[in-house]
Length: 538
Ligand SMILES: [Zn+2]
Image (cartoon, rainbow, N blue to C red; front, side, top):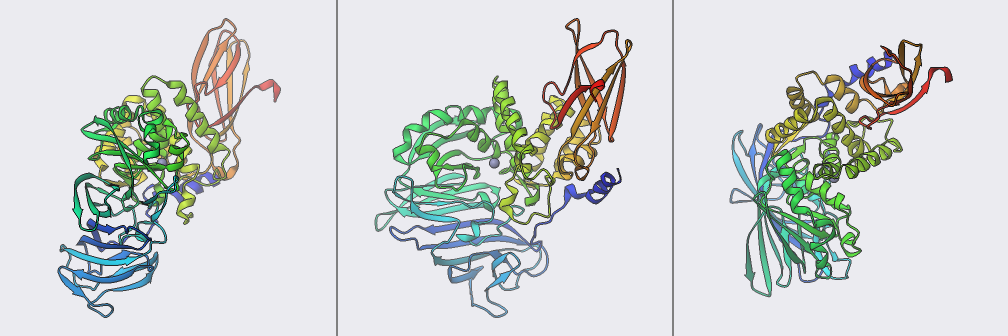
């Protein structure tokens, strides 16, 4: 037992831990990203305006940027800075890779603007390449910190900003990005410039552009936002069928469940993203192959649509709280099916979540795992399926009404902003009316899950139920209420709740007939593995 106490002590307060680096002196307010995609070759040029507030100190403005680019000039509030020296700008190796730093000349409270002009061939983040049909395209793919490979930025989810894009492309192309389309200008030389503006603050990992010969299929308006599917022309027939058939309805259902859709529009975009789907704010990118082979599934669409609320609008302030994004989408995705009267699909998805998590190689580590520094390793079975189960169990603990009221309040309170697990826990506590300390501590900060051995005995008047926690000691002990169903010999069913805490828990109950069968967690509400056997068999 001492180990469990030690786990809790060590974990105390770390629902609020921020392990990632932050730059407290600056707050980026807006990026204006003007980027030119050439007719041939991969050499892009960019002019990026960064508007920021000085919070403390005198700067400098520090931006993540790839050293592969040639910086042609840096202009600060209309003044061209020289390279190097005390009053200029310089590129240097920082803690998190290459950084572009401007001179120290701000005062706390100032709002300043820096423009960076550059050119070069991106080695990541923005891919100018042939698509699945062998046709030239240009698509960004930023998660988790690859925006810096095509525009200078505070490339961390904690510093959200509004963003506008001017994307210069060949005239036969279309360009998509976050936010609303503000216009398409015809330029000399057979080229066009597409302007998109996101008036909502978003994280750099979701700030994207995509361009190429694209067909657009309008899905109509829902929750005050137009929806569309953007595909390569070869795959446009897929837009109105299969996985997007209910895309409008998903936005409608989530809007009513959680709160207004957060963005100006929602585009579902075929792209060469390395992910099956990537929830870029208001412009979801899906794997181009899934369109081309007609294998994109509706569950992926629901997952990415749900991310618009959680992940995009309410963003994890620290990567180690990624479950606030992925766990939520992994739960709300399947939940769509329950909400539209397909509970079997919901339960099948949750059972799959359970199996995937229990069979994974991260069961010995907690969901919030600050020892993990490789961000891509955070795309694991803790942050996805176990995170989904944390929400499902919380819903069971609070009941539907308090759970969904809490979820709505959390969205309303943190929309266009960022949150840590402690913020979510505080809101849910307010709606549950009880302390959820133990719940969040054990499910977010302890590894593993309860393995329960349930034994029972009947002696003519009394049923004795004994529950033993048999999981590895390093996972710690859990406190929970185990639903147990007694199937009696006369066919009646009796549901009882068994409080479980400590290594062994015993419940005695008067009973006039002997149970024929005892079933632990009959409706599969808990992330536990339970074995039931009559005491005589032990
Ligand atoms: Zn996701």
